[in-house]
Length: 334
Image (cartoon, rainbow, N blue to C red; front, side, top):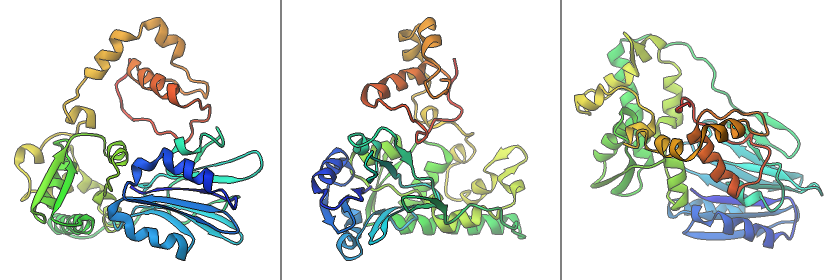
């Protein structure tokens, strides 16, 4: 996962160097800064994304890009800075404006804290020209496929296999594996195409970024999204079985125990269970929770566990604007 950073101020090499230093973990293989008359761009890349670094000077563009649809991109032109983020929102991209009007951007919030506390997230599938946000693509309803379920299942399996193949770079790869249907499918499809497969338990986005690893999400590859939007709803939820058509596509690939496993949140599937919930319950009193559960922006925290995470966040980021932050849906509630 490459790190990109920059601003609309020429001669801001020191600023961009500082920004990249804060998120250097994202790109340990190399780093470069390019200055133009209209601004300054910087990029730190992973080994797998080294080719993307060439356009920093040739096209005045910094990008976090991968073949499977990942893209966060910044291009400086004579008339300004242009930001782009992929439609599924795989690659993160944030921006902020200083009091003097300079526009800064970066792959992570922490790189922007020295310049502004009013930090925004570029929405998926959008361009930003420094003035206006514009959607360049949307996920729209598509006409439902008219075909036999098994034919649809075969095509879905084929597209997933192609997406995994696109992600591979060599004969040794790793896969984040919770033991559930989705991650087991990725591991099984990858294992057929490589000599060595390592499996790991952890949150994909945070863990991969922290260690400068390029993570691919084959389920969000364009050809998979395009086909999934056309699969009839009745085949996705069939006879009270969710992901029925996916299970059919993987029937010859996965053991029955995995194929028929009900959906579980990642923390449950990974074996964490309610350990963190118990930890938070033992350390945060009821009165503390009631006093602190409503945040300054109006959000109401669902549980003591969520409050525990917010306290940790607050120690490092003193930010009132949290619109860019995601929250886990369906988490435990107190």
